[in-house]
Amino acid sequence: MRYLLLLVLPLLYFTGCDESASPFDYNKQIVVTGMLESGRTIDTVKLLYTGEVDKLVSPANYAITNAVVKVIGVDVFFEDSLVYDPLNPGRYHSANPLKIILPTKTYRLDIKTQDGKSVSAVTTVPDTFSLVHSSLVNNSVVKYSPLNPVNFFAWTASRFHGTYLPTISSLDLNAPRILKSFMRDTTMDPPPDKIGYRVGLPKEQTFTEVPWFVLNYYGTTRFDVYAVDENYNAFLNQYFAAQGGELKEIRYTIQGGIGVFWARTQAKGGITVKITP
Image (tube, rainbow, N blue to C red; front, side, top):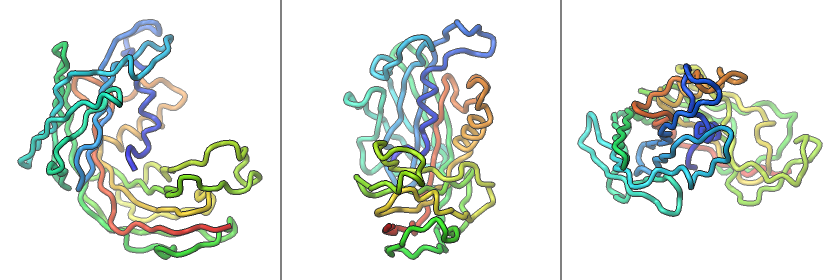
């Protein structure tokens, strides 16, 4: 489940104006999209240049290649030089399966581009935690009904996090849709494969209620909770607050560029159920 809730990030590729610029000025910047996940190797750090708003933007045309990209431990012995993926424009990743990201540790991203620009960012990985209660029973079969009460989930507290992101995912490749009259759209649309539910829970809140309408497909469905760091939490809060405004209002935690470099930890004990009509 790579890149939770990054639907907002592609919009960054189109922004290149600072607050003093006119709507027609173009200030090329480096866009960083990278995530560290506790217990895993580094899957993706993506580097692109911003594109002009009035031109068609293709990631392949704006990908940053031949950069030196490293992730270095600040309070832990760690250094990983990421390699470029020629099949995925702008993507750098770890090629060393032994370079595992640890919870509660702080890591620095260092980037040097071929034209001499330097970009850096720092994130601290949230601590481990566990799902401890659910009104759904793991590996059970559940009959769908929008008249049923909401489903309740609770988890232990993490540390070094900005918020929790409960998520619901369909594990079926071709999950059939619920009735058209319920979804208010057409069955021609492809089924969603993931939902990020309720962005921006209070930092101290360790529970949530999920109404049935969120489970908008049948089949094998998974509920997980992620603790995400302050970087991603701040970005999401600023982005949604700026809706109807301009993205230039966002304050990035990237030095020398824009974007998000962040970390997350998945709660132990996710719930998987099969939802039937």
